[in-house]
Length: 179
Image (cartoon, rainbow, N blue to C red; front, side, top):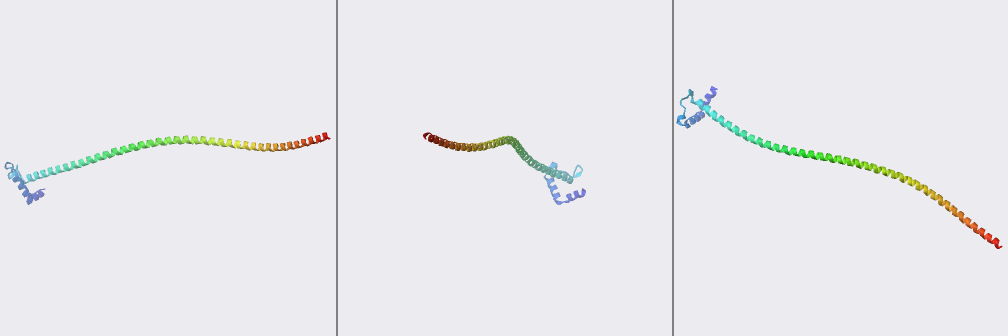
């Protein structure tokens, strides 16, 4: 450390600065050839390093405060985004619940519709069975009607022959009576 101190003290720039600092001090503050048993140069070096350190520390604090302000702004933005995302999530959950309820209602209505369809299919099947029975009865009645028509025609033929026979008999009776 003594080598570094001797290098600094032998530097002409340092000598110029230390001389400028000492000459700028008021007369009653100017140090003598020694400062409480220590030469003037190390005291000035220490004082200069302290001033530079203080200024460096203040600049770091100002940079830190600016970076803290930026971080605070960013945190506020992130909190706002978080609130918006939470709001969107809540809306989506509500929509999901509404869709589930609609699905339940549609399932119920689908079940009721299926039950109604099944009832109607049963009714249609019953009606088809009744229609088949009525068709069979109609066919039986048609056959019976045809038989009756044939019988009626046969009877009418027999009656017309009987009428002819009666007419013949009446004529022959009249002839026999006339004779």
